Image 1: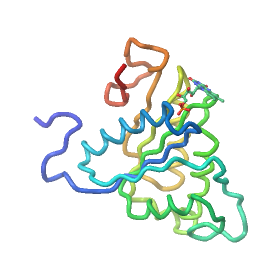
Image 2 (image 1 turned 30 degrees about the vertical axis):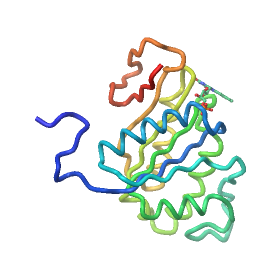
Image 3 (image 1 turned 120 degrees about the vertical axis):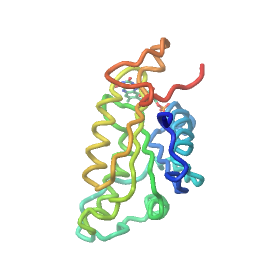
Length: 190
Ligand SMILES: Cc1cc2nc3c(=O)[nH]c(=O)nc-3n(C[C@H](O)[C@H](O)[C@H](O)COP(=O)(O)O)c2cc1C
């Protein structure tokens, strides 16, 4: 029988993963969790190419402007990431939990992707798989994952897996809480 979390040889295909870190701390907890989770995704799906982005603090949200077109009219970091997403098979979005919400800049980034979804009848992201990660001190990961899932679903991504990182900073017993399975969690050493 196939071991859980592995692929049969014929299922393995190369692909590209784009990782987007929505934290305001470049080397914070979210980054640690994302590295671990990206490693896992690469192993499980046989991915060889990864592009990693730390969102600029001044990335603007969608302004619902009248010039909406594929690619967005605003000039900022968004374009570099959007370009990387074009030939990506998977995207891993990571956010710290802020009062049960994803970070404002990750929400800003997702809102900007609307130009691709809206102008292609939501077809643009259809074949891309979204993986979601929330990093918290002690609570709110599930709410954040839920919020991100809703946004990704609206944008037309295929939701592939949940990778929420729960309670690990506070709870050291590694007990899985809140209906998670060990495969959902992303345990860090120490
Ligand atoms: C404004 C703000 C709100 C926060 N709200 C929560 C929260 O609701 N629940 C929680 O467990 N942690 C909360 N935290 C803590 C962060 O989610 C947690 O420390 C996270 O791991 C930080 O990731 P980072 O190191 O990538 O910034 C909050 C932190 C900030 C700055």
